[in-house]
Length: 177
Image 1 (cartoon, one colour):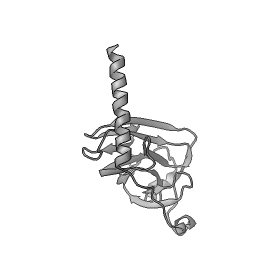
Image 2: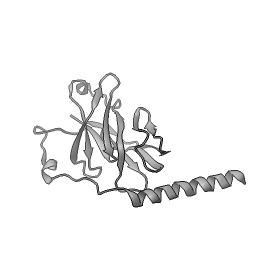
Image 3: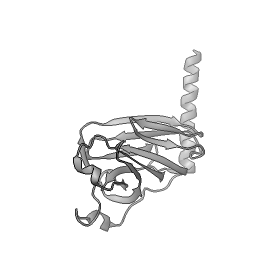
Image 4: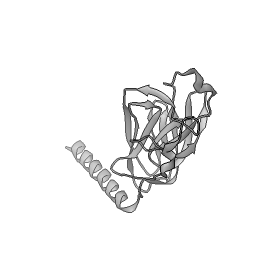
């Protein structure tokens, strides 16, 4: 009986925290000018192709002291003070022909942190030999159209085959060259 009461209390607290956060924070998802989608292969960056037909997701309720949500070495690390209420954070590596991830706050259409967070994308599934000679960046993308919206930069660790960047918002992100 005590365990059921504790579970109910935790569920109510998480729901209340999510509702409070929903009314206290958030803004519309960023959009880009129409010219971004008209890039040709020779005129700008293009998404790195590393196909997978599998989807992997991890979620965790992250509290005010921060925490990490990860899938292997793909992760988001949220520092102390970045959240104003405990928030359920989800990281998904979707089935895609591109090396992309989607990071969301469950129940929100957009989300801003109070401090920058660190995101790492593991691209070790990309077994292309040319990827080691390319300069890679992470781009904020539209998860549906794959349109490149914002260059997030990033520090590319070629030996570990992962790229790390900081951001103040959650979104779809993909590796591009």
